[in-house]
Every structure is written in structure tokens, then in C-alpha cells.
Image 1 (cartoon, rainbow, N blue to C red):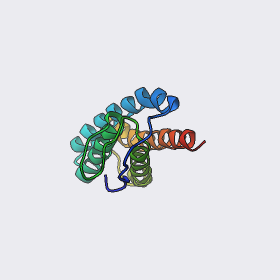
Image 2: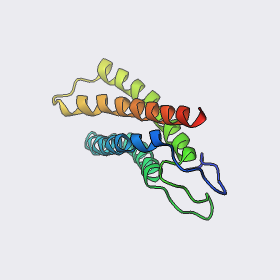
Image 3: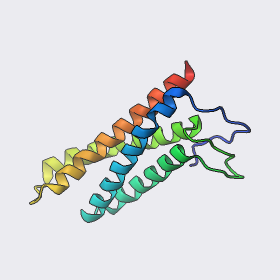
Length: 139
């Protein structure tokens, strides 16, 4: 939330941003499932960072009212930047975690593999959607 810029009056979201909204909601639901899986695997720091990511994503999709940060419409471009940036950083660390996991650990069940694979995939897809929405906003 620190990455948002207070705005006096934000612009309405573009048609492309509104068209991407269902995909953002689907990604947030999948990231919620990954949070549960990370807690089950006792990856509590990864789960905490993913919770922050999902909260910022929720604020991006739903919008919010704040006296400090200003009012934000749903699919606001400043929240888009924040959500995309945190997903990109999360993608980098989750990819590193994925490499370490496959080199050094051999779990007995399939569930950890699914969680470890879904985390960087959802992070990259969220970053890609945020990038495309930003690209549409700039042009």
C-alpha cells in the first residue's frame, strides 16, 4: 500500500482494465488456495507475503476510500502498479524457492509440488495482467 500515490481525482478504469477484472479475481482466488497450501507446508513467511499480495489485489479490484491515500476506484491505475510490483517481486522469490525445492527436497505427497508450482505461475500471470493494463493506460 506504500507504493500508491495519493490522487485528488482518479481516472475511470479503461475498458481493457474492466475486461481483465474477472481474471484478476480468479488469480486472487488461486493465490488464496496457495496461501492455505503454504500454511500446510509450514511456509509461513511465504504465506504472509502472499496474504499481503492478495489484500493489495483485493483493494485493486474493489477500490477503497481513505483519507491518507485518497479514494481509489475499482481497477485504479496506481493500485495496478502496486499489485503488479509486489507480484513481480513475489514471482522472483517464488521461482528461487521452486528451484531450491526441486534440488534439495523430495516430498512424499503431490500437494507440495502443486503449491510450489502455482505460486510463481500466479505471480507471473498477475504481473503480466498488471503490465498489460498499465500498457493500455499509457497508450
